[in-house]
Length: 114
Image (cartoon, rainbow, N blue to C red; front, side):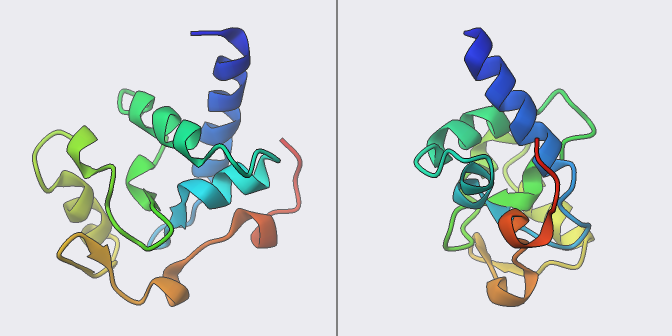
């Protein structure tokens, strides 16, 4: 992996670690916070690469509509949904319910620079 991608992935992980329990954010919101608004897909790649890191809550990162688009990267077909439901997040047909209330926007909620 290129060093610049490694550095970007590390920044993604630092933001993801700050997502509060029971809340979700989107790939695009993380990318925007990192000053790379058009890099939502790269944030997705970072989340996919994080599955061997226990301290990165990749299950809390969904697409902008609240869909569990990354679920096929988790062991077991419903693990992402189960992890979210364990935190009190309601998921119906791979869709986060009440997304507006649960959405955590790092751009609005964080005051740190990574």
